[in-house]
Length: 266
Image (cartoon, rainbow, N blue to C red; front, side, top):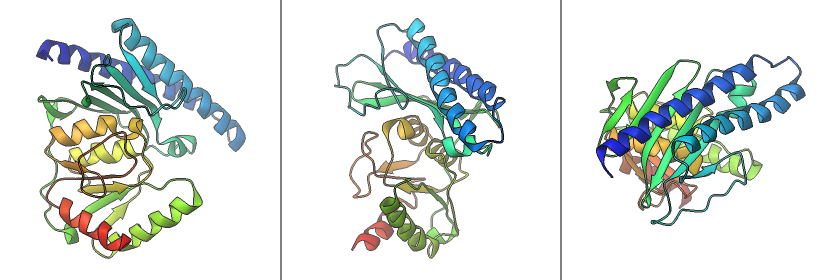
């Protein structure tokens, strides 16, 4: 990949994220106090944001492909020789959005040649734009970001996510209790993408989860990598945005997190 090509993709991803976020904020203004109306509207907002993102990117790169949360829900891994494929979550943190809790975002990754090479996460409520491209570093706005230097669990602030299914929630609470006895504190933001962005900029030190989708993590993986962090699956194998289980950290506490997870399942 030529640097100019990467820069062009990155600029397009940022503009697409802005357009998707603008749709979310326009729809948020239409919400009423009626819960059913809110959930009806959030589906429309989701689709409108994804349409805005995909239409813009398709105009810029008509030969590219898309994987998105809103659509057929396909999680099929593109082949290494497939066209560049945009992995889009137009609204990560849906429940927060529905309740007007300001922790949600637009997440856009680009998968090329068998790996995610570019990621943009835009938080419309704070105005924060996180971006990264392979070999180009990770940024919050125009400022370079790095993961934290925390090296022991007793000083670590960790994040996780809970799936909606009852059996998965039971499993998640088991690990929550395990980590609660080891970490300084835990957070459940309700947005996987923001959790990964916060690891990249040092606000969180680690994250674990079992039920992610590629659109939840693709952009965040690039941010964490370029910020100096580490990503594996729960068994310690290599990162894979198409796998559901993830452990993400500043690198310094990564093995400690894996050890805790392995104790939990033993």
